[in-house]
Length: 537
Image (tube, rainbow, N blue to C red; front, side, top):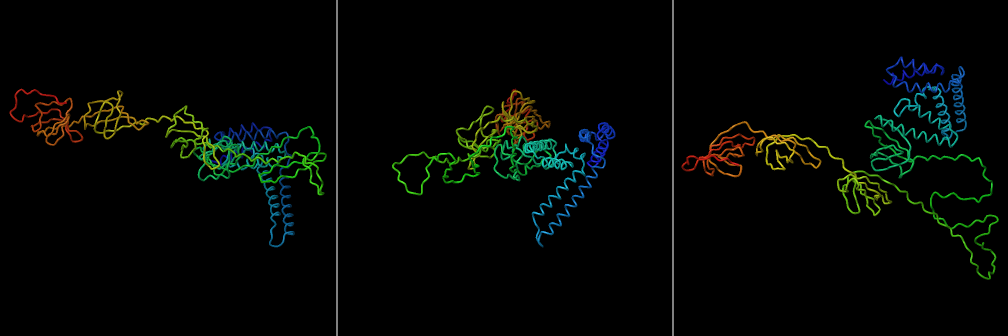
């Protein structure tokens, strides 16, 4: 696909170049009509070539000028190469290679080769590379053209302004590559705006820090750095190396008013370091009265001592330590009156620390954003802590089936799961221990489960048996070793008592118990006629 695109682009550039800028726009439209499937990729580059052709249409190169220039360049490169080679062989001793001569020779060869490469590539290719990004085939051509432009810019002010424009272009390219989720290696320069253990912000570009990132130096806010990074397919930019970048020196434009050529007292440049300097001897300019009398070699009598004022040398002021601010965001792991731990980082709390609890109260587990200063002993002192409101957790739907173990007006236990029941919970059927229940619920952010709907399924298998009543309790009997559960629909005939014979009809529950539907209790002695049925609860 890339080869096809490059071939189409090359054909279009040839047609535009052949038009000599006269009908370049019509040639472009005609060419696009012949290649409509590649219009989206080809049109921006060819349009740029058309604009450039229109700019240089007024001064076309002479016929054969480009070919003659190439020929002269090749001849001159060959002549310089031979002359330099002969000169080095004549001067250097046997077995010794002059490093200086090698560097001069390499510089000449590289320069001539670079110029030749620009001529061979042609202006059309350089114009087509203007919108290329890191990872594109034409991106090295774009960078080479920019380097030539920077090298041949002589004016210091123009050179500094051009360097700033190129730095901004590199940052825009980084943003474009990240936005397109491309994998590419890139580099850019900028000022440090934020620095934390996990990410930096350099002139608005966010780069992430990994254990493999090499940071060469101790940088603070406003420092100019060079960032080598790699963009990933997930839209992130990871720094591989961060180093100091040389500052841009902008020389002010000369003033139209000439400066007076008066005699000036020479001054010293401030030292880069602050050494221990002994008091310096004062120098006296012509016409000045010395502040301290010079000692004479001949002894003289002094009738009286006269107090004279002497200038006390002022010691150089030490440069105050640079503030390094660090930004940390994460959950509060622990809190004391003097020390907090946020996202695993220990932060000291001072009297000047501002704690913002407008959105949420500070507590362990809450989210917090911290701005701190790095001290000389590498500890962190919090400047400001903002407690952030936690995002509400989404409700997770839950569905399951289980046997009813217990129930009340507010809580049920079904299949080992504790459920919250409120007036809005829909319950179908009467709860009974051991019955099968189908539950639809949601798991809340605090880990509890709120039941939305409970459907109780009655068993369909009927059973009937007889036996002695072994125990009687509220809602549950044991007859011949079988647990018989009673609810509001269980009908009991006779007087229940332990040791009496009972005939049970009911439904077999999943846990092996029987839900009694009708129980007839036989009297232990003589049966009493006309016994009224009773309903067990």
